[in-house]
Every structure is written in C-alpha cells, then in structure tokens.
Image (tube, rainbow, N blue to C red):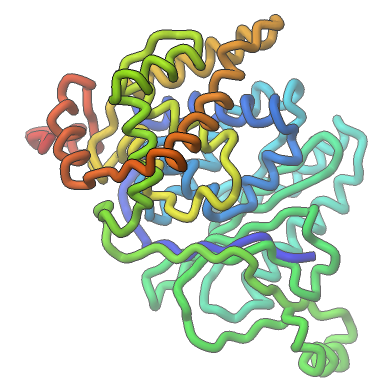
Length: 396
C-alpha cells in the first residue's frame, strides 16, 4: 500500500463564515456530482487523494489558497453536502476534526451494515492509517483531523492532517485504497509538508532491520514505511503572488472569458449566454472536474474563480459564486432527465481553454488582473471575513 500524497501547509487561524460555508457545501457537492457522473466514484477518490487537486478544489471553493484550514473546511463541506445524496452517489464521508474523528468507527460500522461489507475491516484500516501517520512516521506531526471516505463497493480514501507545534506547520496526508498493497511497506500515495530534516519512518522499505528489532520486542508486525509520491509544499506568505501561478494557464482562462470572439464561442459550448466573470469561474471549475493531474501544480490559480475569504487574491464575489453554483445545479438537474448538453458543455469548455492555451499562449498580466478584480469587487458583492467584523471597513 502506498500513500498517495502529502501537503505541508502554514497554520492559519480564523473561521469559515456561514455565508461561505453554505456556498462551499453547494459548490463542492455539485463538483462531486459532475465528477462522479462523468468518471465514477473511484475517480473521485483518486482525485481526493491527490494533494494538488485537493488544494485546487479548496481554492476554487473560496478558501485561503495555502492555509491549513482548507482541509477542515473542504472535508466538512463535502460531508454536509454529500450526506443527503449518499444513497444516490454511493459515497460516504466519516470522521472529521477533533472529537468528530472519534466517531469514525461507529459511522463506518453503520455504513457497512447498510451496504453489506466488512465494517470491522474498514475500522481497522482507519485506525492503521491514523497510527502510521501519527506514530510510525516520527516527523513531529500529531494527527488532529481524520476523514475516511468510502464508496458503496468498499473502495476508500483517507484525508488526515497533523499539527507540529514547534514549526507552526500542518501536514496533510492522503491515502487511496487502490494504491495500498501493504500497510507496513511504503503505503502512502503522498505526504505534503516542508522538509523537516531526517525523520524516522518505520514503514520505509529500507527499515526492515529496525522492523525486525521491533518485532522481536513487540512480537507483532510493525506498521512500516511510507514514501511520499506527490508532495505539495506551500509558502509562508499569505497573499497570492505571480510566482505562485502559471500565468499562461491563467491567461487562457481570461482570454476565453474576456476576448469577444473567444467568449462567444465559449457561450456556444455551454449552450447559455454568460457574463465574462461567471465564464472565468466556470472555466476553472471545469478544470477541477475534467483536468488531468499535471494541471494542478499551481493550485493558487484556482483562487481566481471565487477569490478567498481573507481577500487573497480578492474578496469572494458572491454574485459570481451563486451564478456558478446555479449553473452547475441546473446542468446536473437537466442531465438527470436526459438533457446532458449543459453539463457536457463543461467538458467542452475545459478542452477549449486548453486549446487556446496551446495555440495562442496568452500571458496574464498579474498586476492588471488583480487591479481589475478589486475594481469590480463591489459590483459583484465582494465579501470577506473582515466585512463581518463590526466597525471594520472593506478594503475592496
């Protein structure tokens, strides 16, 4: 078994305000439904276990692009939104942060009883992944969030996060059952975090002598080594900077949204006339649903869909956010009764943006884009957590 990924994230305080949490739930649910509808539940777990895709998902949902809070907020939103559709989609999310993580065993047993698979085996798997990341890898991070996602056929993914008090960093660990062969020999699909120097990793393939010694002492199999597959390291600075983004990829999105002929063609692809700002957001949402793994190396780019709750790179444009969610929901509802034109339009839009990127190679002017977003923020009902504080003026 191999862990799918790891992410190192700066600790970031604050909260997710209700106006954003509700929208994150709706958008996260719609994105999941679109993804599962086109590619299946296994593909959703595969993406969930990719630290780069996960970070891009959080950014497109309006969370701070680089902070540790993305993990709690995204998994919480998905759990709330997918629970009423669990029977329809066959996806169940258990656990959560702090005390909610301790509910995981009972939640798994209840789901297993309904779905007819071995609940105790899943409980054991849940505990093993937590113990491996918390104990078998001595990297200084203590697990405080554990989310276990399981499908109707018993396939699973784990997203969990640890805290290092000394470094002030959080580390997110990703697992996917499709890549796990042996819990004690390099089980992770990835671990994300800053380099902490040499650490003890008792699930490393090279740790056999140490494992043998422990086996003699404990008279049981040690939980062995994890080797990072995809590793996301995010910087300390909170603001989005030009170097955090692939400006050619962002340039293609902006060209499709704002250049008259390209925008007209994009409208034809989606079978609906949309404003340029909504088209910009939907192009980035379409990439989250249909993009290949190599497209998520710069997750900060996806914050240009719906901004960030702390105004990085700009305040959350509520009008645009709601238009994006409404388009997705209407497309999904139409697809359920056989009309797939609008939901298929997202796939066509994603392909069109990639074609524009390759053929025209447009380059976004980062300073100009930020200035434009902040200039139109008020007209789009731009909002941040700072606007919720009494007596505090909005910057944008």
